[in-house]
Length: 434
Image (spheres, rainbow, N blue to C red):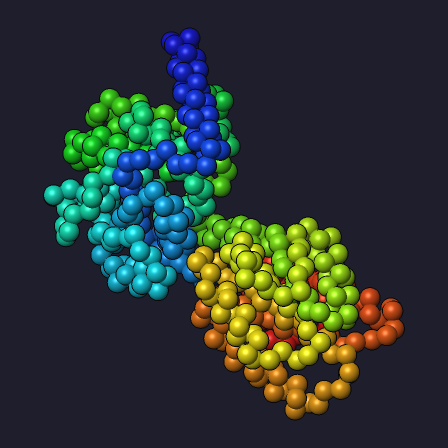
């Protein structure tokens, strides 16, 4: 028995390696080998009891946007995925409809969930069948089942899952076990432990030939519908289809507890804080300030580009942090132009940061003038947040004293890093001083 299991493990390992190599080869060649219809089912009918929150976790907001919207976007941006079925509880139907409309999700159909996870997934699969409710969607060759609360997905891994499912009939993501699994006696004492190296944690996404998983659910017992959670097991038990197991990245983790929402937000913020673009202007003062800021931000681990002005060829979607340097007080028309350019980018999932740094060279600004500037900035910032843009302003007082100048520049870099990394709505529209 032990030798047989070892051989099985080696077979799975060889299958996984071959699948990975095939996928990577196609991606490297710059072409997509998916020439068959693919759809996604996202079960999202759970109440999220383990978070301890009144709002189900899939609808909790991260950076002002519901978690499920991030997950939908991860699939929607993959051009070879045709449709996404989101399965929600009856009482969440209107909320989900509002999310689809507000965030312009175009590939989504909403389906009412069931009393258990397996029943919800089956309801999602029925959307492609004559037995489903409402207009039938095109039946896919491969269907991907994924958790609505696992938002961090990359196309290359989805491609591996999809191609493996098309070839084998079923495929699933796995991760190494972090903890050793133990079995307890009825009295609560240790019975035995499992050898951790021989086991894997089953994760999502999972891919299936649609006809296989649909048939598996048609043969489900009442007990399986009520207590089961593993889709791959259903395909094996009812259709004899043994899934290819593909080790996935660590980013496949699931938002389960309340603290996981904070972790997800931290992951997103970190990914958005890797780089910035400084718009320097042409004058000497802003050129010098740009050099100082660039060195300071790069010392903080941020990649920084500096250009005189925003060029038409600049891709805003790849750089979500814009720093505008100016020796004049910011004018509303200039800020609105920046916001319009950000808004017009296709990727509006994550918020932009516009930081306007105003260098007061003359040192002469009346109290009423500063109040007028601050009021105008606040009004613009309120409008900017509706467009998924955070607008911050920092006012610098020019000094010829080298010590004072260095202190101001260091403070400016600290403020800049904090604003970009934290992306706090509370400071949007505030006039800060360095």
